Length: 308
Length: 308
Image 1 (spheres, rainbow over the protein chains, first blue to last red):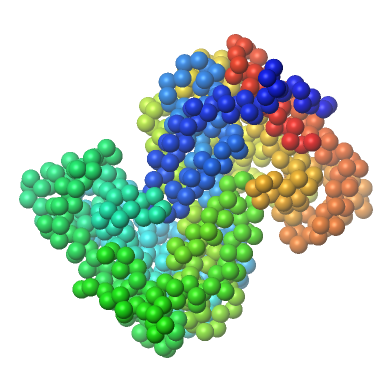
Image 2 (tube, rainbow over the protein chains, first blue to last red):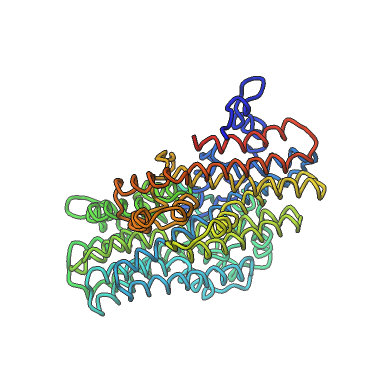
């Protein structure tokens, strides 16, 4: 049984794929816009992956199928845009699962159970951190301690694990391993604090980060926690009016930043980042001096200098 | 407390990031090669994401940290390459989680519980399918029914869900929804069967698919199941000698393909794909004729024509 190529062409000689692309083009533009919008995350990899999803164009049979089915059924109410994007995002979870499987395979191949344990434990802590952060979203009673708990789990744990497994591969003794483990944690904390300052300082990163995203998403980062703690009732109302509101205007955001500056919330957050840089450098002190030790010491400072 | 920019430069005036990049460059080349190798999957999105991970270059502080820690500790045994790649892959799981969260948010926003139910159920079935497929890897007693179960769950379910939620968005009645649901399932099955043929036909896809990957990974796809069922003992030994062996040579692969051709295993797999195309077109029959119905009918045939 051989497919006749002619059977799949219409009178104009267009193949089936060309016709499907044409018939869904207008709707797929909306899907692409939604994918870009919803993948506008601070995590650098997210917007990049979203861009890939869009550029993959013709290969995206599944979302085209969703759109085509909606059009075929005659009364599309607009929900197909959300569904098509959701179908595409769902597929990307499988990619993540695949890569996690490969990650553990690669760990196993080295035959070192302790390194595997470090990464497995990190994965658990990160997942817990995500759950905890979700529970705190938009919660105006969140404390600096809550924030510290979130960024330790969500960001710094993977930095810590990255440094610790490197130490294991480098034949570190227990003291060197602890030193690098502590260094990774403090570096990660400094990194995240600076990131959270930049979200209000208007320096959009190259990777899709937009000023004010955290506020609009209701993320209780240290700048907003510190500002709320010191705000008078009128200032507090201005902050909560924008917190967790995706459609908060840039003017409203500017008001919030002005309140933050009045209470030195951003400056104090940067100071905390410096404190973690100091601890990161201190953690390296027990290691014998070397060119690499100097680089790691300096790189911590470098990442905090992004805040200026 | 202000960071002195001068403090982070060495005698040659190089900043900390430049020095870290230089000191880890040779090792990071190995990490990049490993990432590409381990992300060489058939799922089109996986190798693309891997390429992104590599191109992101300077931003990849975490794997550089792993490499730097290993070098700093003085006795790197090579495991740092695996660990650095694993750390990077681990981060990509978070991207998947983020996008899954966004997927469900987008579904919820449409206010239609039945569409949310369709995608949630699909996610469950897909995960089950992955587990089932893992349990069958390299199992020479796997049957065509096992294969059918895997591809229904792992590939066709998401096609089915994509078509069904589109129908919901299009205001379909129960009959139209069922029709498109069945169409999506049959289209997905045909799609996967052709993909599994192409893995042996030597037509590497644009997206990182390599001939013989399935055999080397021990994937029990229909061509190998059919060949094993009809093979004589000598042929059987040749197949099992390469099955699940990552380092099987291209010559060994060619021998396996010759055995498959002797028993028409690839032709019979394509025939099954045609049977699913027939069912996909049949599923559309109850729907009123329209340009879009014709396109969907033709597109099923188009994807199977890739097998030639």
